[in-house]
Amino acid sequence: MCIVQTIAASTRFTMEKFVLLLAVLPYVALKSLSYPPADSEPSLSFAVIGDWGGIPLPPYFTKQETLVADELGKTVAKWGADFILSVGDNFYYEGVTDVADFRFKTTFESVFDAESLSHVPWYVIAGNHDHNGNITAQMAYSNVSSRWRFPALYYDLSFKIPATNASVRLILLDTIVLCGNSDDFHREQPLGAANPKMADEQLVWLTEKLRTAKEEYLLVAGHYPVWSIAEHGPTSCLLEHVEPLLKKYRVTAFLSGHDHNMQYLQDDHGIGYVLSGAGNFMENSRKHEDEVPQGYLRFFQGEEDIMGGFVYVNLTAKEMNITYIQSGGKSSFHTKLFPRVL
Image (cartoon, rainbow, N blue to C red; front, side, top):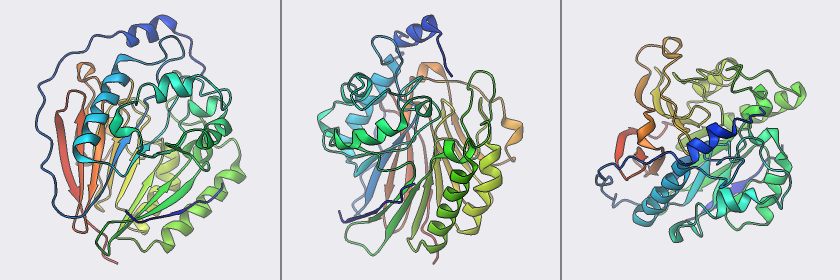
């Protein structure tokens, strides 16, 4: 695979009994279904996983996280992956303290330890809980781990689909710098940018990256979702500042987490909104369904007994296949998007 990488520099929660309960929540077995058939065409593939960041008490991971990690390892062993995209909330609930924080090992390295994942890079962005801690330490861990790639608060990547003329641009945002942090337990929306100058600089950077993108597939990722029917709902800041850019520059898809479930939405411009926030917890909330335009929601999964999942993306020169995979191996939803007409 030929990869050209360009980089642009750029609640508190103490419910111990609750998190311990989640850590030992029993797993309800699911009948495994076959994965989608392997595509014989040359392709680029990756998994999208969000909100997988364990708990701040022993054992520092949840049962759901271990099951999702196990299924991710099996999927990559069977179908391969060029990288993993982590869309934030990597360490609950207060991020990490420094680059030597033991949580890197107990919540990440020791959980996502399948042989198939040992050499697959993780491209990382921050969530609101990560920003409660030392975000610079998470970026510095890129110099410690051979897998962990977190070069800047926001950055972009360019990939060539092997043996084709098609290419992919992935733009990774820091939506907390852009919109502000949020108090998950008292306020659903971000509180507003802590540093408006930094937020404006990121928007200028994003606009220029979108304007000059010539790739057939143009993907944008951030922790907060643009559209969501669940507990946090649509992110008003992104609807104001980012959604118009997605439409103007014909973005293929927006990838996110934050709400602890799995959703796929598609707007009337054909932009796919991939929400993959089920790495650690599940919340079966449809609290903001009335705030999402009718017809946008195509798939929702939040039942607690599902025990989480992730999204597997496979791109060929002809199409972008998006498959939602839950713990136990069941493929619960599949859809396709297509290259931009340049």
